[in-house]
Length: 182
Image (cartoon, rainbow, N blue to C red; front, top):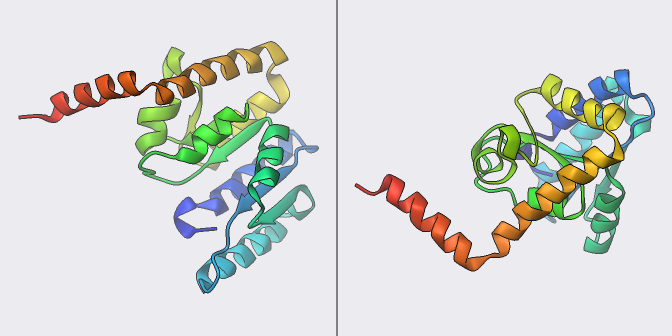
């Protein structure tokens, strides 16, 4: 749990989701580093905020969960959200996509430019604020057929493959360098 991840925005968005999908559940996972008081303080603030928003019965906090438990949670989830602004890349997004989650990410930095994308090529949703996150989540939870989710998962799988292709990575890297070369 880190302040730069803006996890309070996740709670704010989820509170809005619950007004449309009252049965929704959220699992917030993260690490609390030993001897880092701010991590523990933030976790307590987030729990208090969930109470203040009246969503504590629908939110579970999993702290320092072992990787197999994280994977199990991701495999159960339909949607995963990422709220850090100007994230340089966002490896967590690839983990979400690999687990088959529909991704809703901050419309900035690497998540926008390198991973999720926009338009017909998008492999998820981009959002700016709690309303945008909530709208995307509600759309998936209440309006998407299993075929539509499978279609997006297949697109995401192809996107994931592009990160595993060293030759393609080299070509893309060289092209990006040529864009900034003077």
